[in-house]
Amino acid sequence: MSVLELNPGAVTLAQLANVYWNETPVALNPACRTAVEEAAQRIAAAAAGDVAVYGVNTGFGKLASMKIAPEDTATLQRNLILSHCCGVGEAVPRRMARLMMTLKLLSFGRGASGVRWEYVELLQAMLALGVTPVIPAQGSVGASGDLAPLSHMTAVVIGEGEAEYDGKILPGAEALAKAGLAPIQLGPKEGLAFINGTQFSTAFALAGLFEAWQSAQNTLVISALSTDAIMGSTAPLQPEIHSLRGQRGQIEAAAAMRAILEGSEIRESHREGDTRVQDPYCIRCQPQVTGAAMDVLRQAAATLEIEANAATDNPLVLTEAGLIVSGGNFHAEPVGFAADMIALAVSEIGAIAQRRIALMVDPTLSFDLPPFLSPEPGLNSGLMIAEVTTAALMSENKHLANPCVTDSTPTSANQEDHVSMAAHGARRLSRMVENLNRILGVELLCAAQGVEFRAPLQTSGPLQQVVARLRQDIATLGADRYMAPDLEVSAVLVGTGALTEACGSELPELGA
Image (cartoon, rainbow, N blue to C red):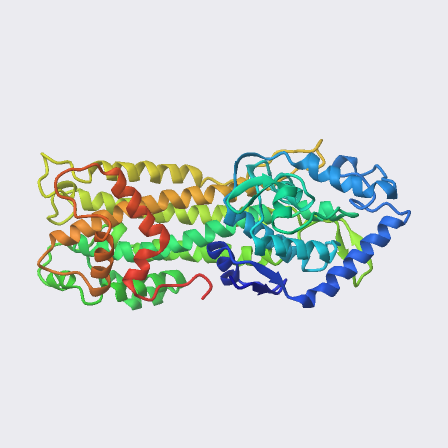
């Protein structure tokens, strides 16, 4: 696999998405090496001096007033990592750990952390050779930095902890050795540079963002199919309506749905003589809701792109000013806000999708579709309980969408007295997107079934391709059958992007 070269301070969302989805190895542009080494030299000089510099020749947190002798600085950094390896719970997915490592490289590349270039080379080699630290998912409050998870990442770098290599979980030192690598002993401030930072929270928030945007794209396709299934009107997609409001996401959502539905025989069949005046909001207001969610996702994306390029450890080396200064860039409040925004968007996309499902299974609202979309209702329950499952998932996501950043608790003997809670605010997002994809998967089953009941009338060309792709894996529902596999497969189709690929229509892009 080719290596992706990154420019610290100028990395894009598209590059980060490449790292996340494809586990692409990265390397920093060599032009940043000079700044990295200059900062390391300044730290080395401070460690040899008599002036107390936090994290260089002092203790940490509440113990910052304790001076450390020069001969003990290496031990100090090693002890920091080992003592902070207090993460619990299941290990983060490999692609998430690799994204964390990439973000840490980018932070180092800004030339304000004071680490030696050897650590940049080691992290790059670990990514290239597939040495991935085992990082427990729980234990960070999002300040001062994602201490516990980043310590588990760093432990492997110094030959401790555990790592995955060649499909096996091994002691960190053994994993490095099998890959032909060697651990490096930490110097002054280097342990602190590794673990003071927002890379765990930011990685999870970015992953949630990328997954949520893919779900939003799927929503445009599936909701268009639902519109045809209930013989909904496309008049609310008229471009002038949306340009008069001017909201970008709404305009793009309506345009995408218009293009997807273009040429539908079902739509043309009821332009005249339809006794319904207006569709329910879940059909009529799709651009306003999905489009608004897309706008919120883009707002969060702007914050996270900045954070991915940031130097977030402490203290920071201000080379031009000749200073080593303690600050608070490790506080993940911006990431926490972004994660909460993503959670709200995911919840709302699922909420309106669930109402479309309820519309399609209800014979009083679905415009002559059979009850619960069964060809023989009564003897068969059809998609009755699949709709109930989506109601449960929708409600769960509503609960999970409650803000995390508004919570705080003092830690470390009240030295760290306000924290962001960005870590679990970001970590919940993958679970929420998984719930959303299951909701959308059920909507896909209902909409495809509904469109097939409209035969011999046909839906649009792009949507016929979507239904055909679904039917490669899931047959039309006739008599009742064991439904759980259908729900799983449909969610996978949503989560992998197979439907948007089958549709073939141009869809809004996150960074466009």
